Length: 372
Image (cartoon, rainbow, N blue to C red; front, side, top):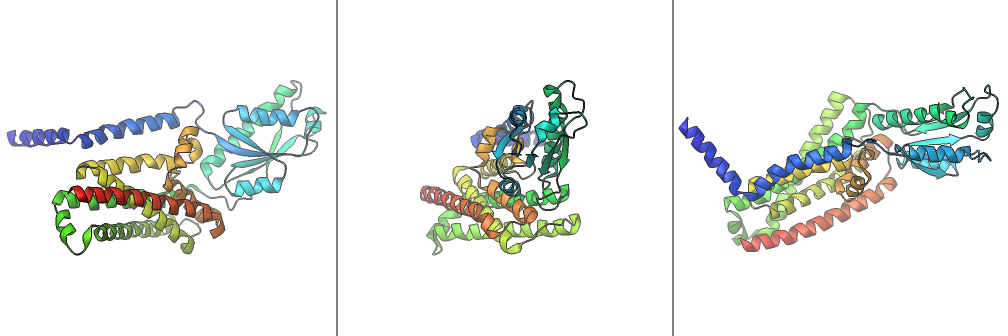
């Protein structure tokens, strides 16, 4: 018993000597709790962009009141469109989550005899079941109460007629979650593996021998990056195969388009792992840092829930995280049948991010090698 207590005391003392390990051990629960509070602790935990096409332009100003009312709900941010074709294009691009069309004569029907039907048309992006349900419910609730503010004597509510889905095929939860699952190796496999590959060389004291060998430090670095890329590819292949076999999801497995996204996403993860490994002073510290950062980044990338769930300031942070573009590209390819032209911006962003991160990592790596 004394031996067990002695070993435990020794390990606890070792833990407190490694300040980096102590920091990440404390930082992890603090960061997770703060993120959960910021995301789910709000009174209105969701905001979606929707488009409104006003064909009525009524003299009563009812259309303007509808747009103002939707904006004031706190759930929606409204973009006005003059042309429905343009609005549907934005819907297909996932820039808006629904398009509401106010038909010509709407205000007249609403303010005339109760027998006259007053309706608006709505097209919803059904490629994300959670968002579609929230948007659909919010719009219907708004119009179910809006007419009462116009005419207390009017007893017929406004009808929201949903148009046939124009954005692909309505999908289920299993199809929606697969692209997010496939983003997982880009964060954990690539980042954590590359972090350990470098930092453990220093811990074992083999880096000095490598530096003196014909291989040289840079060849060692690129060799380890290649090995991390290989291990990440294995994780992606296994997860993809299991998704097909176990979930039977009906998705677009466009391999020629998926490969460059997986490759660029993995390279960004490896570069981040390289930077972390050069900053961490001990294997445990570097491992804790990589795991904590990977878990935290999940909240910003849209892997498991829509980015609209995030407060605006956190959404802005997500735009600077490369994996956000990888996750969205995978979703666009597999659910929206995106083409190469649709992916030029995310591919360019991922390429630029990987180049910058690797440049920073190489500079840190060279300084780290020189100190050894």
